[in-house]
Every structure is written in C-alpha cells, then in structure tokens.
View 1 (tube, rainbow, N blue to C red):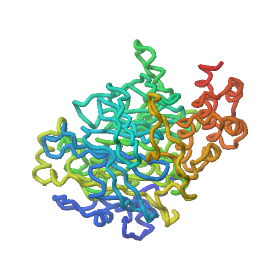
View 2: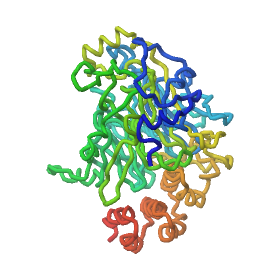
View 3: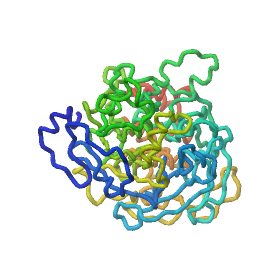
Length: 554
C-alpha cells in the first residue's frame, strides 16, 4: 500500500512540518535563480517527504568529501569512495589526477553521527566502487580491480593485489565505468556499467566470470535473487535470467529475460515530479525535457537502484525499489508486483516523490541498506553533476552564469527515518558488544598468514561464530542476512552444514530456505538429494534456484 496516492489528498490532511522535512507541497516551490551552497543544517530544511518520514544527517564535510559509493563492515563502520577528481571545474581538468580516496567513517559514541575519519587508501584515479570483504577491500579503479589490505591493523591499506586489469576503461565517461559488487544470493558479486566481468570468492581465491555489460551506475538484488540495474533515462531493468548464461554464446542475438525494461509495461515509471524548477539539466531548452513550470518531466540521470530490505522503516517499504535522480534533486520510490507470474513496476506516488529537495546542489548518487535497518542516501553535494563530454553549450552557460562550478569537496550522507523508528538508532551493528579477533586470514595467493589484528576481522559477537551466522540468515534485516551468508562463505565454515541443511528443509520462511541452499552451494556442501527436494518446494524462487543448482549436481 502506498503511504499516499496524490498531492491533493496529502495537502487536504494538513500534515505538519518538522525541523528536517516539510509537508508535500501542492505546487512547485519558488526558488532563487542562484543556488548557493547551504550548510548541512540548512540543507535539512529543504527536503520534502511523505508524512511521518524525515532524514537525519549522518556525516558531512569535512568528514566526507565528494562521496559516490559506500559499503559497511560487520562492525558497523561506513566505508566510502570519494571522487574529488570528477568535474572539479567546467573542463574536468583534474580528472586524471591521483586524488581519489577510500575512507572509513566511525560513530565512536553511538549517537548516530559519524565523528571519526580514517583514509584507508588514497592516490586513486576516479575510483568507482568498493566491497568490504573479510580478507580486504575490493576497489574498482578502472581498468584495474584491486584487493587492498591492511596488514598491521591501523585501518590503512599497505598492500595492493591486482584481481583484474580489464575491469572497464579509464577514458570516457566515469559515470558509466565498471562498478557494483553486489554480493548476491548466488555468491557472485554482480556489477554494472562498462565491464563484462562478475567476481566471486571460491576457496579463498577470486574467480572472474564473463557476463554482458548492463546498466550504468548501481546494481541491487531482491529477496528472490533477481538483479536490477538502470540507465540514465530508464528507471529500472531486471534480470529474470542470470546474464552470465547469455554470455556463454557469443552469437546470441536475442537476450529475452536479461535486462528487461520494466517501463515497457508502464511508461509513467520514468516520470519525475521535482519540487523545484530544474534549469541546470542538459538540453532543458528542448521541447519535452521540462514541463511549462520548469521542472524535469522524465528521468535524465536516474541511477543507484536499491531494493530496500531493512527492518526499521514501515513494512510497506520492504521490497520496494528506490532510485536516485541527481539532476532533479530527488529519490524516487518504485513498487514491484509479481503476482500472476509477471513482474510489474509502478511509481509509489502520483505526482510526488519519496524524497525531494529545493536545493539544486542536493545530488543523491548512491543508496544503501544499512546495519541499522534503515536507508542511507549519499549526496555528492555540488553544482556540476554532468560529465564534461556531455555538457552542452546551454548547460555550460547555466553552470558559469549561476556559479555552479564552485565549491567542490563537499558531501553529505543521510539516514531515512520514520516516526515509528526507534529513536536511539545507531549505525553500530554490534548490540552484543565485540569479541576478541579471529585467527589471522590468509592472503589471496595462499601466502603466509596476515598479521592480526586485521581492521575487518569479525569482532562483532553477532557474527563471531558459525552458529550465530547461521541464525542470522533468517534475521528480518536483509543487510544482516547478506553479511552472515558472505562471512560463512568467506570463512569456509563447512561445519555449519548440518544447521544449514536443517534450515533449508524446515524453515517456514522461503527466504531462509533459499538462503540456506545458496550458502550450502557456496560452501560446496549441497547434496544432490537436497537439490531434488528443492525442485518441489512450494516457493517459486526456491524452485528456480534449484534449477540453477542442479546444473552441477543432477
């Protein structure tokens, strides 16, 4: 059920404003032609959201600068890629400078705001994406894919190992460069953009799998294991069949079932409803780009799809997809429906968006599920969001005439909250406290053990043992389920197989049965008899997964 269905109904109810967001407006808001940068506390006052929702500031400059992507470790620390080289001026003159960073933000006092910053890695050129693993951090710096490791426990990378040197390309538009690393149910890290590689860990080593280039920026997964991406003018595409199957045949001309465009059944899916005019979008002078009131009519830079799978926001948000539209300064919500065997998508609200700002410099570029069960929004916060190769003369005049070129080096990260969310929420993922470090992990090539303590060794008691990890596979927070599965696979915890077998056969929730099966598959502990049984499971996603698992076992 949608929280509200049209602007008129919301306005008529007379919802009251709050310090961090306002009631949904009945008309586009009047704003100044100039868009000066706002301090974080002032920027909070520019947001419009459905009744009961608000955003809270988690981090801002100087703690975070030019953020484009984030990930979490099991201790609840936030890892971010910073891209100061992206369009630092109208010509992008510093694009190839080695000034990119991976940083770690921590909330040391549990108040919900980050207060400590550590530079894990610097000297990077347009680093694009990251994935925090138990053995290190996977970092995409096209064309290189690195594993970066901290060997002495100071939270700084001192070893870099190349995983691949053909992960996309450095020239061209960095907005389309290889990115992603969504560790999915099938234990592959799925990617997006200009790369035809997917990655997984197998027996302590990285394996690369050829796939098809799909999407532009961002990749996400639902509970059934379906993969979603998008492109700048098309809100949502889905892989009903894993893309790697199609890559097996280089002569295949049709890929029905891969990267299916959900707007084909609903053109309104690509309609947007900003709360301010959008003169600073490319080709805004062309007919049909903007409405008569100056607002963007359709997506032009939609990115960062995310299936929300947390447990701290209202239940009707679970399983819906959020997408970011930085050109229109908003985050849109999409509702999925697969009743009747056909997956369909629709916008959650008529003539409204989930999160919209009157601040032209609000640039949401990444969305994330989080250890605390909420939704995080990464704001690159700047005037220029278009890459130089796509800047028209019109947009150039807008940028220079309205002084959107400066400043850069800003950035904000927000947490979406609801009136029903527990108010003492904190990103810290370890309510049970921390345990002593595990034994040291081994390096990628099986070299001598890495000295302890590793920055990412699992000290959180919730993830400290195989038994606790198995129990976490049925947690209501999808981030915890994902993390538990990954740690079982990374740790090679085959001793957990009996508990996983029991869960796969007896769990009431199909999601727990499905995840237990994929975890067994990742541990090479899945017996053919279990696959045969799964082929008759009452759950369609379980049966579909069993077909894939049967390839190697039946």
